Length: 544
Ligand code: UN1
Image 1 (tube, helix red, strand yellow):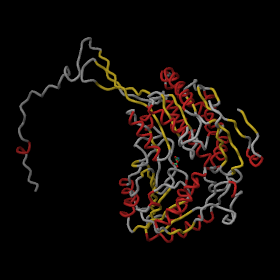
Image 2: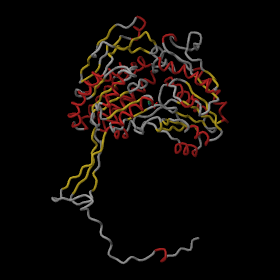
Image 3: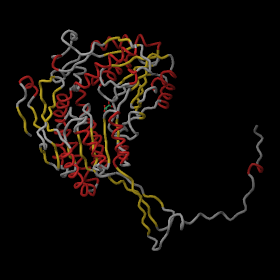
Image 4: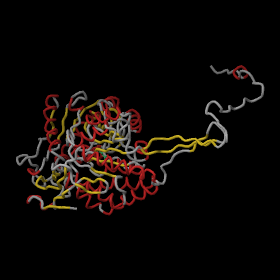
């Protein structure tokens, strides 16, 4: 790996990686001189890496490599593919500390959360290693004698992947690992916020023994740059399957392009996740969980809580406890202080959107309970850790008086802000919780089993927590949303296998003659006895 000296202000964090694309198991520079920098969001003096901006040429090269690798990889026995995935998981586990450090340094997660997100990738690798020994099809009876029927899962071919920066290793693993295990090959465009982690991911995959062309990584920018070239690749027929985590707007563009190819992409999109707190909830627990749900990761999880739906009987008490806990949260640079609750926003785009939401809320007529926008030297909390001018640090924010039809209650902000919506009953809470265009995750705090039952039955969301945060999906459970949060595909666990394989039905006729389905099928013979007649007349009932 090539490194250069960092900026003077960034030296304390380490050197700057000179990155490159990863095509056909070779790390190589781009076809143009255009580069982009990956900055440490907690301290923008730190250049974590410098990477080439990939374009059509690089993507095409990666697709060609992936297409040629597919022939052999798809025929490699699944248990052998699983073994490589297992070795990859072992390498992730051996390097967990360093990878977690990179997650902290490159996207600003706290140490505790960074370790958790790397663990999610390790769990995924271990889960799919064993799936290589299953990947079950079925044996099915035929209508005819001496004929066997069976089903096989077949890989699609080249899978195009675009992933987001907020979970730079866990979420790509949810896509790449099952896609490869199922026998596909991959062209991955990681987030421009996390190229260094993606680079190291590719290096570890190489060390685990992935053959050339099976995994290819093209770095670059989103928007009108590399991201758009990837999406154009769908219309060029380069991919047989596409997987995306990111905004609903971009998800729809990918969905349309895939639709033109008659493909079903995997789309994991936005959320405005509701968290309901009923009047019978254990308030202490609800406050602690809500804090993490709303402000953990600086609210930059697609599963973060957007709307806090409070039963009016406990609303004031909850808000008082929640506010005083929020006031004590330590914000700061997670590279220098392991105890901060959240760090800087991942990038300035998120920062601008966070600042914009104050205007939106004011127009809506929401009431600001706390939150002062960007942390500056004048508004710096007394327990702030680090230098607030070195990154886009923001105050936790809480709005009251919000109604579900307000813009602020409908739009995802992706920052540490949350809306209080007061309700009078369980029924109203449920209808408010279902009142957005999204349906990713959801949660309720209650001690009443009936409310738990009704909530999980009637909430329209892909994931539901009872007495827990809206965040915190596990690697072996289905992850994904309803409505605007996705197109119904799921990641993780056995469910994701459906996303990366297509079914083939096979029949083998061993009868020695032509037996046509439906036409030559025999029918069961009728019983040769006289029917007893109408059972109701034989045993008339005296019930009313
Ligand atoms: C995301 O933010 O894209 O459930 C995924 C969670 C994490 C995954 C979030 N395990 O919060």
